[in-house]
Length: 433
Ligand SMILES: Nc1ncnc2c1ncn2[C@@H]1O[C@H](COP(=O)(O)OP(=O)(O)O)[C@@H](O)[C@H]1O
Ligand SMILES: [Mg+2]
Image (cartoon, rainbow, N blue to C red; front, top):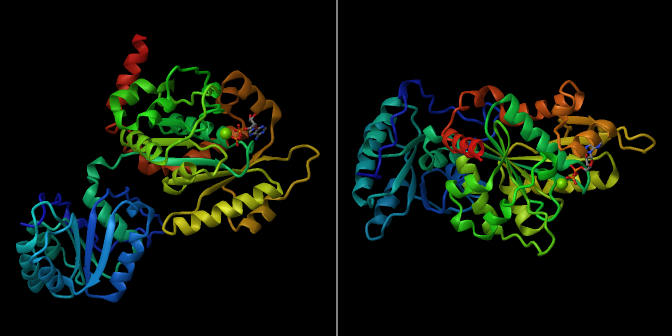
């Protein structure tokens, strides 16, 4: 028998085996794939090159992928005397009957626990079902595209029932003071408010972060405790380290004490964010204006990126450089969302939104005016813009950004996810405190 578990038989007749997220103009919604060995045996050069491209995607960055030719024949010969990897991706050009019997031969050389993704050239629901019955975990119909390949491999490792595993949104400023933290906190607040979905703000500006101030919180413990011993972080500890800001919003606060230096470890940071995202549907990461290894990693690996820029030359250059970096590192993701902030500061010469967009080749999704009064009151009172003035344009803008990031209609259904228990407990604890 191939594989240890037969992938749940999703209602095969309704499933369009050739449906691709790219065709619908969407980015792949795949979750990262763990540190597994993946070996692909292709028949078609085109398939091999798509798998090769998929293997370079950020979601497969932990997996070891090798691609070779020869299909089932080569795989059976190869694994005759060798143990099989965690996942075999195998292409067949045959029809249903022949393919099934080929996969039976493959099953004989497969170690228990090895998972199999089959690629075929026939769009046949009966074949799909029979393969699943044989223990094949996924069946994809060629021609493949990169997004679909990532998604199929990802779905082998991520139970679709657990699809509400969190998404990480990295907020970064094109330069210091552009308002990135303000955008991060207000957007997180909007997601929590309008979507009624649980959100954690992770303030990675350890020495100077303002999330605590912005939400009028001064917790004793927070994200630095998690980063210091990431291996200890589980949902119970996470629960203790988060501070509640509102019904659905919690804060992983920065210590902001300057008695020690702060060097963030790349792996510790990754582990901590993984634990948060495993427990909460939305993680808004307030990334300080730095390009240290860990910060770069957080931005490049997150599900969504929001860049906040002011309309000046330095911001323009930095935005362009950020976009170029992201394009190379994340070729299969949608581009970052650009926020042009503090527009119309009296007497300041500015680059127009149109010229800015043209230069960076990306339209800003939001343009937020400079408003010293509104933003000043909010900052000094430890309030969100929506709390100071719910009907203001910036409050609308943050709700719009929240909608764009969360793709509202789709997320609504997932609202009462497996995260409920953690945040309910947190609620209880705070109520008791
Ligand atoms: N649209 C705006 N109009 C006026 N002030 C703003 C606006 N956006 C942000 N600010 C203010 O700018 C300052 C810097 O914002 P912050 O979010 O800390 O920037 P960053 O995180 O990019 O360094 C804060 O005092 C904030 O209140
Ligand atoms: Mg900041």
